[in-house]
View 1 (cartoon, rainbow, N blue to C red):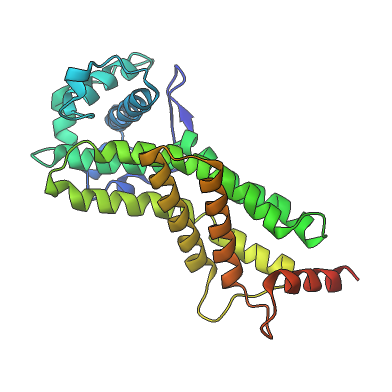
View 2 (view 1 turned 135 degrees about the vertical axis):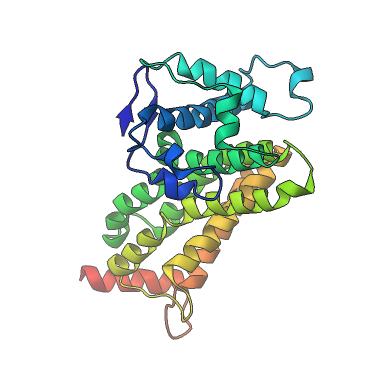
Length: 292
């Protein structure tokens, strides 16, 4: 992680040329090791500008008027202007005009390609990484308590699922907000691909947690179930609830309880207690044997 001054942080450990490969005109423009360092910085400033603009529009801090935002919420003009503001925080001048934007995301598909890069940037941005990592990190820290009988697995699932739903609602609002950019059919493939990127960024963090949980609790999955498949199923379930709540505002206790119950059911259905036993009782028996 490097700081460019003024509180602007870009992550040099991310392989940006590979990540942006299909969506940027030349990979060198996203290469932090480019001898022309300013080319990389300029690219990231455009993306940081777009991310900040979305954040401000979501929180109601945007200075844009209703008339200005009625056609599209994230136009090239808006991104360029916002990037210029970000550029003022840098110690060295970088060119973030419309020409520099078109050089990176040229032609009629420029904004859709920028949007894809923005999604990939968002998935790796430190501010989003913190919330994506919270659930898996908390679960790994709490699993020893479950093994020792100090915490019920259902309690752990409830704590983590409730937090993750709250975070994913925020992400869904961001996502649904992006879908309001346009109803043009050319964006359908962009939307589908971007959704998969965000789903994968979340779910891949959970597979190691399920693997560790199996080892620590001495249980196994049913045939055909893997940590990766369960992770994707739970992530998709969370995304579905989050998008419904974000779109309808129906963030009631009953709705959240229904979500927690659905996640618990998914996880328990994936476990194989053997001999047709109830999974909760089987788990308690396994843990009692481990403690004796």
